[in-house]
Length: 311
View 1 (cartoon, rainbow, N blue to C red):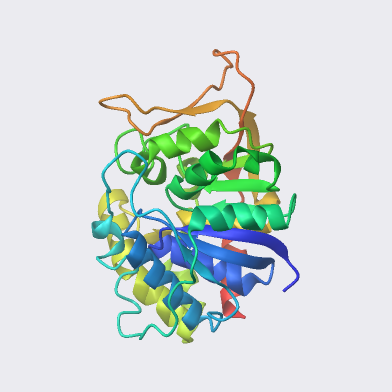
View 2 (cartoon, rainbow, N blue to C red):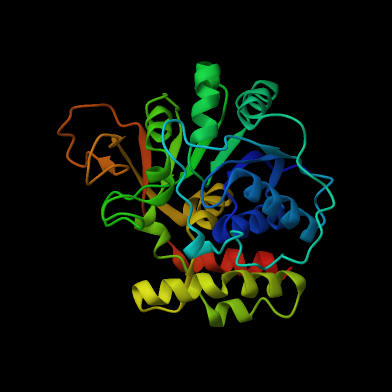
């Protein structure tokens, strides 16, 4: 494999899983590893889901999976079973036997090892709470100068949250970890938040174009309840592709518009814990630390996703 070197960090629920499908099938990446973390589901469930997805893709021998943190840095776990189902992927692979378990090694250590092995080449695609990366930074602060870029699906800067009125789920689950990552000093850190992911809606009509293939059947089955929950909350019957868009940005950065801002994370608020606070007017007089996605070419992104999974 000769594409961009990436590590995917996931808490494999419905949209993480679609992101894995896109990452592997696109041919755009050399996937060095997939690391799992506590989030939508337990770290162990996320690991099983990830291993099964790689079996579906017949890539289980090519891509190693490593387990990471099984809890946030300081808080209790907060799962999203109502949205993603008890197993995280809507029961879609419940009957698939698991042929290969995770590889030996801890996710944070693997991130450090791969960054040192390929200095300046590794892109970290983070579609889960940022616990693993925060732990890696605690061990190796120099990681900020070793990786090429970090792309984070998380936060919301100009709209409402999806787990509280102000917070997006991935940041809310471990805001202390997000704060460490945001302030670490990565030269290239992109935030793919709800401001743009909410525009990336996969409708049933587009989904049907995936055809009657193992991948197409998996996508329809895994997203059925997910789409129903979205309809109940928003009145639109569609699958919102949060984590998947972060993978799309790693493939084609031109599908989003970004602006450089100073962004911090609220960690001590009764009402606003986990909120990503963006200093749009530079009122804090601090140097920008994050490239914030402000718009997305929805058609280009959805075409990329559907075209890739059709092949």
